[in-house]
Image (cartoon, rainbow, N blue to C red; front, side, top):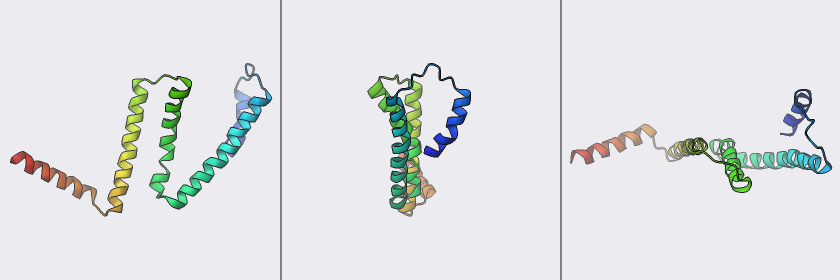
Length: 129
C-alpha cells in the first residue's frame, strides 16, 4: 500500500481536482496513519498467515476484506445495502465455501468426483426404493 500510494500520488496530483479539499493537519495525520500503519499491520498479518496456514486459505483475505468493509459501512456509516450487493456477498461466500471444501477434500484424500458419484449413487438408491 505504501509504495502503491507513493506511485499514485503524482498521478493523482496531475489528474484529480483538489480545490474542494480542505487540507488540515488532522487529515494529513489520518492519511499518513492509514497508509503507514495499515500497510505495516496488513503485511505483518499476511506474512504471519503465510507461515501458519495453507496458501488457499491465506489468499481468501482478498475476497473477505471488501465484504467486511461493505458490512461495516452499512453498520457504522448507514450506507445502503441493496439486493445486488447482497447477491454479490452470497456468491463470494459460496466461492469461499467451495475453496474450503476443495481443501478439505484434498486434506482428507477424498476425490471430489468420487464423492459426487457416491452421492448420486445413494440418491438413486433412495429414489428407486
